[in-house]
Amino acid sequence: MPLAILAGLPWSFLAITTSSIFFGILITPIVHNLSLPPDYPHRKSEHPSISPHIPPSTYHLSSDQIQSFRRDGMVILRNVLPPDIAHNMDIAGHDLVRNATRQCEMTRFTGPLLFHGYHRYCGRAQLVHDYLRDVVYKSPLAYVAAQLIGTADAAGSDDDDEKEKEEQPILRQIADTFMAGERIPKRWHSDYLSFANFASDDSSNAAHCQNGVVLWLPMQDTAEESNGMIFINGSSSHFEQHFGDSSTSMITAADNRSHDDPNDFFSYMKWLGALPKNDYVAPRVALGDAIAFDACTVHSSSGLHREGGGIRRAYQLRFLKDFDLNPQKKKKNRKWYRRLLFPSYAVLPVASPQLWPQTLKAEDDVRRKVGHIIYTRIDWIKRLVRAPVYTLLSCMLAL
Image 1 (cartoon, one colour):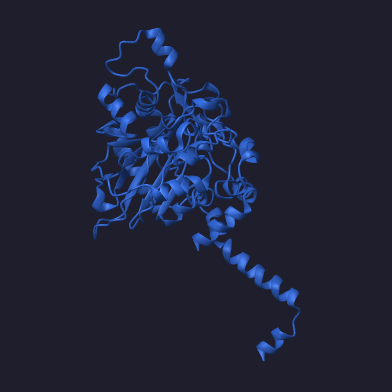
Image 2: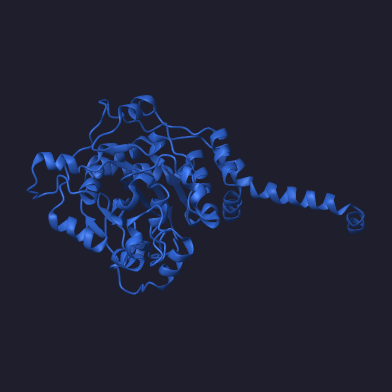
């Protein structure tokens, strides 16, 4: 009888009803996430009171460490975080795992699709947790990034003060990310395309793989057998050799016909698929350490999990020169599938703050000192509507 009733209904009615039910199921995670608390108000720490703020210059890299980074695309830094900041970062990591918030859960739908595989993912977590904001502002990580990306203040430098001042790179921390998972699959990738999405048009041919640096911070002892990070030896230099002069621009290589374009998703994936992956480095690191690697270094979680090892937690910062606060203006010049797979969103300056050589008074005074930066429900809906296909793909993965 029910089938007979359904058979008598117009096909248009059935199609609309079926589509509505399917759409309702898809957006269920978003509706739930929008109802979550917006931040972590129970952890209190003062934002730097003096503006502009100059991050601490307390962790000096040796010339060997800097050369290692530029040669290999990565370097391991021991005890880079002060003990109090490392301790509080660990507390923040537990907070984010235990308590879901609107900021963290909604960034799953605007961040890379692969992060749906994590137990907890949080983009720009420093906006809603004071202890992670302290990692960004009060640790020497901005100074470390400045030494790796530029040459100013490198230990053992013989440059005079004026030359060092001229060479100081202006850096923004473009995207901090918290990631936690128990069984994290191995997915080889580099962060080049993510950095390229925010590189300024003004950088022209000056933007290079090592104009972007990631600082990956474990929140517990981490090694290959416990979902630790692994890095392909020489992958950054291999990237430059393969893409040739085009890899010196994070914006466009359309005029360079003699090489593949690293900004073309399919060219990039073809190169990545052919890259030998047997020779890799698997660092063993602990709370307080950092792994620094450049925008082109190919890396992944190991995909290995020791039984009873619990959830692996990590926090990472990305620093970039020549940062574009409004990447949407480049969107029209990108190929359709790139716009689909990597949607661009205008970024609040305070969400990707300038940190080196100092912060900007406008960013400090206008928003940061008043407390957490909260995106409203309407803000999130607007962001999702700007990239509807990407949002639907994200919803399917979230179910």
